[in-house]
Image 1: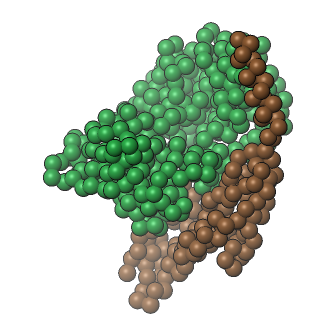
Image 2: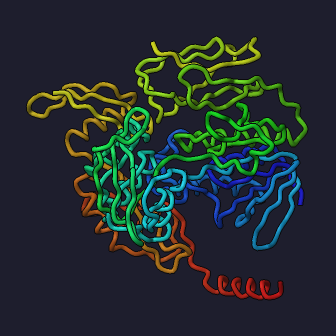
Image 3: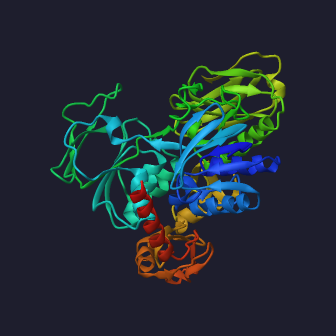
Length: 402
Length: 140
């Protein structure tokens, strides 16, 4: 089989990419490993999506269905239940119920999303009983499969998914005894602390972590201790919670295993490094969404997906794209995306600070902007006008405390 | 008295300060970046309201649950009761986005609305597909 633009992943980024590529009049094929497109949106039944992109507050499934509807208006070959095993030199090998297939393409948009940091990565001492889940798995159990994970739960990690699951579990009658966060500040958005924890009087234990899990077959207790500045548990501060369920919300990792051996990764995000038009270090490979950097909002995922899809289509049509100049992280910048700038389109930078900063000055090229109340959990999104970027052969983003 | 609030109307999460006088009258609202924040702060002081999102059992659907939300915010104090009422509800597939699953929830004037499409189960197709797969496996 042959196509012009092959989009891998049918979530918020991939659907946006496929739509934008199809608008350029090229042949587009979208591969999705699940039965339906929509990605993680399908199980995110809470509201808060779409304020930027659809100018309306939607739930995850509604957002996905709106994109699906637009997708259906174009002549896009959507292939579901199909898993990509290999990407090599503009050729992709897929596996599905119909067997193993090879697809040749002119360009690829890589939009595989992120996966959750698993329990094994946390290296917590103790037993290995049942009853320990990632937040996304709990979300799928409750919202799609109509199952509850347990009766009494503790949540480790205060990322947005963890906070949202704290509320969801409470509403479904599971007792949530607390949320444990090893940083001295919450990992999720302030609004989620408010509406998911404070609304339900769920305690948040900051500068704390799980030091032990115990249980014969099913989880019986979890030991939590305070940590010092180097995240080492402080002896004598242990507190035991009798719970049958531990929910992990320890962060998301961009899924890059299919491309990591031939494309440059973004060291600040762990994702596929791309330019502002979504192009990676390999000229025919474009990337978008959480496989490049973990975003705060799905709206940005779709917007950047569209951009990558458009330029992947232009590349497939043989248009010459401009040289890209590198963008490096400077002072207080923990996460930075994109990592190159191409004059072919405007520059929107997505960045996270490495620590909370009350008042700061963000500098890139000749552009300066004063920002207040910066938190690592809240992504800074800034459009930088092209006139401030002229004459540079290298750019750096720095966030100086003032 | 000054109360600190975080706006939950959008992901910006504006940090607001609400100045109150002794009789719980709102004197001043600061920190909101849009009018929705102002309205939110006012309401938060009087009777906090929330959009409730949850799910409802579906009979004969290709999945067992349809996700739902209230089409307008309901008083926070009624969330538990609302969950109990919604738990008792059942719908039959097909369900479309926007279908009203429960109207006038607990007399709040809010309707419970489907937020996902659930198609009827294709049980025969599924069995046929299984048989076909089995045959193929045996052939291999």
